[in-house]
Image (cartoon, rainbow, N blue to C red; front, top):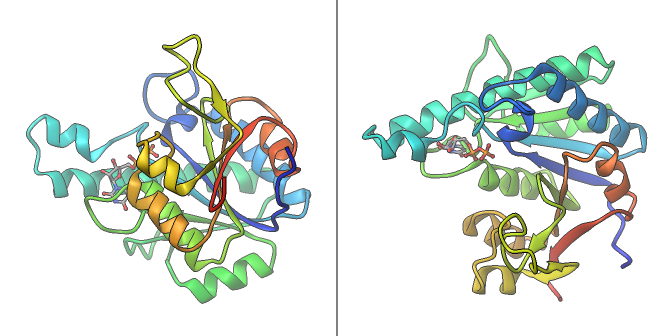
Length: 240
Ligand code: UDP
């Protein structure tokens, strides 16, 4: 399959990618591994924005399920994404990649607030911009944060790194005959409720014509391959 070439991309990583083989939290080796992947992408000439989830530390829904107020729990989830962003910033800078973290919740001592024009300047200077705290509001997820930042930063595509190599018609971990799609339309993802990202994130990408590339981030070297238009992935875009 030939895929379009991109220049500026937003990479969305779930918090779970940072926990490695641990059941919880941040595994430094996993973060260093991911930072290496990001560095390789940078060196291949891509401009990179990063959004990292917080599910390895705290998810609002999980808190609400145990009786917490949902909004309060969601704010805790957003704070978790800031911790992950700082861990990734640390790993990238130790590899010599310049970065800036911008948080949707102001945290002046820790990172910059989200300022689009400033983020633009960082990218021009070759820095990786890590957007933390999602959209800054409860009842959203970092998938929506990723779609929003991809749109406002005019990214050519949103790359979603997961633990499977694309989008399947059934859960490949449970159904042996599950088929992987090479390409899908936004419409199909929403109509069939395929688990790519949450619906609001998919709709935002559709409305702004931002393709979503779903690929396996756990396979070393895969981000560079997929960015080069090689490797296994599913691309979700306007036309099937
Ligand atoms: N969150 C939120 N608003 C946002 C982004 C995140 O309330 O704009 C909260 C929400 O509770 C979510 C948690 O932060 O469960 C962690 O983010 P997410 O679940 O998206 O992380 P991931 O699944 O990607 O690790």
